[in-house]
Image 1 (cartoon, rainbow, N blue to C red):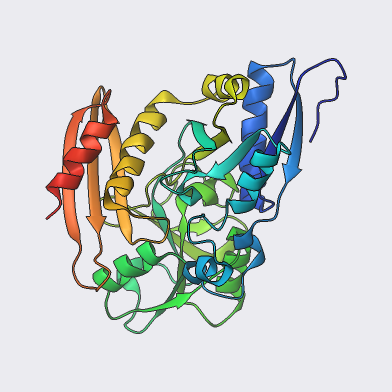
Image 2: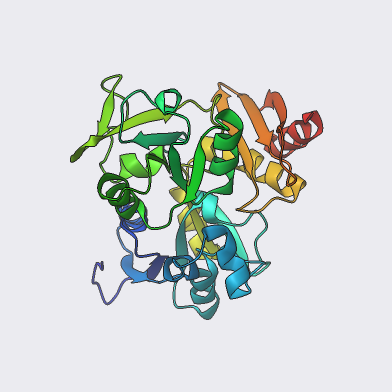
Length: 322
């Protein structure tokens, strides 16, 4: 994707090549193009470790590749930032590690999509309607642990692949009875409308698959879920200004609190933590559910306070865990 003008400044957007990543890159490019019409925008599609290694469970990819300090979906994008091959990396924010290398910076986030998890099943009735022993597909430790806690009679089975691949596996293969996906991805890809039109929703184009949007207070989402993050080189002031110009402040306040809570927990992308936030006027509300590594019931916590100090609220949430 390129707007050619030899006299204009050039900005190279880096993205993964999945359908969802490309939709997110297109959204970013549209906002940049409207805000900075003088820019020439170029897209650089980069294959990441997480895209390449679909042979092992997602939680094992980092171990298999020896990239313990990196998110498996961002390592190559950060290498491209570092080398100057791209100027802004577009991420699903929940893929971005809580603490970034000092060479990089999260400059902005776009307006957030829905944050809920979506339960997609071959049968209507949602999670409660599944019979004992039914198989749930997910690659997320957080989703797996919450399912095992809410419905210990179900079986969790590893599921890899992008969103269309996962839906196709559920529809066509006799391996899964249901799968869990982010509502944001299903909406962005056109599989679901922005809000539920009927109580018994189905996947657009795959009417045999039924969807239940799981309320945040029942099934806690990941920190940053539904948000698109824009990562830059730490000292790149011009592109920080550009990223911030298209950023969404209410989303920034929420994700700052959520990510700081993860940092206080010393939790990474694969730690089973659910945390969600809501803004009511100038009041920010946070709730969290943290599953111990050894198994068992989660710790829970909640905090509320002025939205202008999300770091203090994250500290309050951390201290409230019990």
